Image: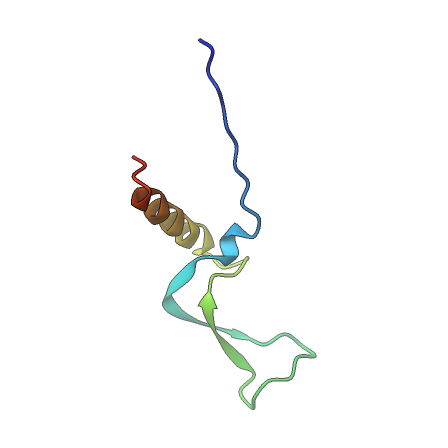
Length: 69
C-alpha cells in the first residue's frame, strides 16, 4: 500500500498547557518563598492529574487553527 508514517516528539509538551482552574502547590524544600510557602500554578506541571487533558486541548486547538481535521 506504500504508506508513509511521520512521527513528532515535542519535548516538555506537558509544560506548555495553560490551566483552566486554580491549582496551588507547596513550595519545595530549600526554596525561599513568602510566609505562606504556597505557589499558584499558571501552567501545567508534570505529575498533575489533568496534565494530559490540558495538553490535548492545546494541541487540538492549535491543529484546528491550522485547518487540520
